[in-house]
Image (cartoon, rainbow, N blue to C red; front, side, top):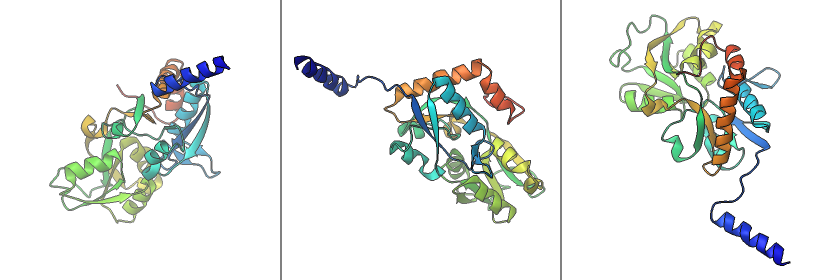
Length: 259
């Protein structure tokens, strides 16, 4: 009986002092969006697919953990993490100072610039003056939304969407003049498709860390730093053993990881 009391007392002390034993993380639930091709989308048979999805599964293997994917709309993806609907987010979420106030991150697992697109011939040369008065579509509550609001909010009308697919539909329908998003999402998710053949990139690559952060990372709750470290080790593992390159090469013809 005395031993049980002593063990209980030690456990209470460790918990109170923040030194409780780390969780083993043999099962990890990962929040994904499922509406951001080619990074994340839903196939006709209802199965989740895409670069983020394959990376999530590969990281689970490298960690020795059973991964469960949980689809979640972008608008609620961080609140659902904080509410413990899942343990981590792998959804092309850029590592920014603003987001780090709410969640912690792993190291990056890819980094690509943002861009604008518009209808071919509609804007001769990109400049703030040239796009003044234009309606620009962007996915709500993203780094692109933040940048567009801060830099061009007084010059353009901003139309915000719950998903990138909704933005594409409105561009084709003529309800917006331009879109801004990740360059790869715009290229593979729209420009390379039949409906995007009349549209093109315009303006420079956008990658200022002030708005676009240090690349996309795995988001986790601040109290789960041990899980972040497991993801860091897993990212290093899949990059070293060729798994990352195999996944990358099935979606892109360039180094999506960045410098």
